[in-house]
Picture 1 (cartoon, rainbow, N blue to C red):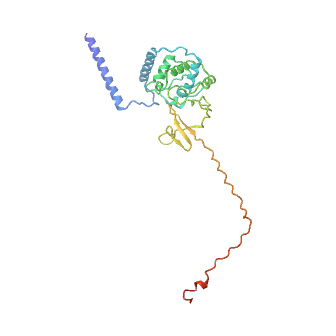
Picture 2: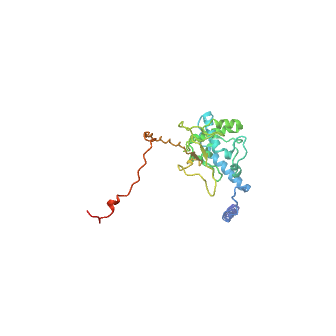
Picture 3: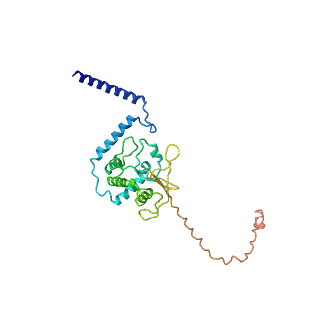
Length: 286
């Protein structure tokens, strides 16, 4: 009995010391949270285990819908993957990107790693805290998330040419979450016609530059160059203004020819002063 009490006391003291050490570490700022400074092996192992177990436990409660091997589902998911995921999780034959190199932990290369459909769905929908993985379920409907999960089952088996063919045949960035339709492009492609059948406006992506922010205007703002609008995913476009040709001026009315135009006019006689006899004065005799 005495041994048990001693062991419990030692455990309580150890936990107390760890709590004190943790508090000192947090408030002193000694632990470096920079993304370019890896976790210590113990912290990394703890976080990685927590992540894997959390995802596995929640994904096990999901029931994937039938037909995830349907080509229409896979094709639709390919367009969204190219638009929303390839920057971090890469595409077949691509090199690491600025995002994938700058994030820590490094995003998994999904062109090489197979992820179950249920786990892919859960992660895409809910994201992962403090990892750079957003919760796309806030803007994407479940049907479209399952389509992306379906595409991920095929991705590790694709080479660059087959991947680009799937993306080119997709509808681009479209997931029922409020994004503007008709602006999702496959690699190297652009819209040539709007969904309404009218010719598409010439578009220019507004690049972010300058001091402290983007140069693009808010949605619906107009300028001499055209109208700028912002998509739900943050992308901005500039629609060039339509220039109307100037309306032709009506011709000047024809005037009737003057029959006297070529006739010589008599010289006007100079006006003479009044008769001096009449204006000599009023002193004359009658």
